[in-house]
Length: 419
Image (cartoon, rainbow, N blue to C red; front, side, top):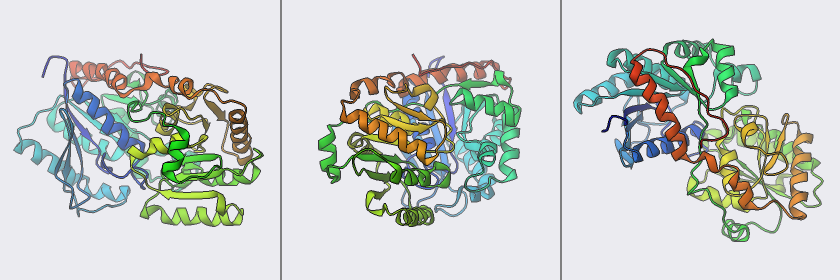
């Protein structure tokens, strides 16, 4: 360890960073933790990611790369459970974490928690270890409840997030909007918040020849509209289905939906029923979960990727699609305002009203018929979002809180990617 490297205890209690992406509780946050840990490890930091054991066949310790590993701790039965049910196991998780640390004689410079459940544990062990606690919420319960779509977040979560926003030494927010929301809903001090965007694996997410990608995925000659993500009401997939009959692109595009596990089947069946009522069931292909390594095939095969969400804390799908040279249509959520260059790499719509989505999708499909913007220029719009850049941007936040111990540090804002 050098004077400018850190020993970091990362907490991801409810979601394993190597879990199946697109399942009910595993999405962009898991990608974020995994990729950030790998990049920090490359620069010499030592990162231990603590998560709840959920699969009896999983090793206790999983190596991610140089200096980065995942540690599965038993807290409750070793099986998948709903994330809210994890709350009853937090005390046990904190005890297991401390036992593991003591047995292995580990010391850390900083705790970095992800999501409010991890934040609860982070605050508890921070008092014992007397090291700074950094938190990234990823989503905010108060925002979800204000939108009013999907399940209502419990008062327990809202209260915990507000307390954590006050008690931690630093908050990492992915966007300026999230920083403002933290102040509006939780009275988070603005000088405690660092705005640092999420990133994208530019080595993995690269353009593949469109026709080659389509052959490998068994697609025909239709235009392809792509949705990637968890299957839940907040993602607005029903609005995208309702947009399909309104398309006037001169073609019959196929909507390909990637995501959704066995715990999402009730929502998938609701969407299938909706597609039948709209008489578009033959134009929708639910592909289920795919390995992340196969996602570049889907992005490259698609003519447009659509993000019809009501809410995204950041929206990694946008970066992944653009990195593969595929334009996006997206609501004004997460990073979209920062990365969309209207008419160059996609379109941003004010909301997910089907008619708005349909008009923007049809416009992009028509542009492509007339000679689309080059995939290279679309990819160039996210060149600043490589994970190495994001890791280097987070290091100063660690440095400041470590230097100040458990006192608050001055926030900083990094916009439009990281130079």
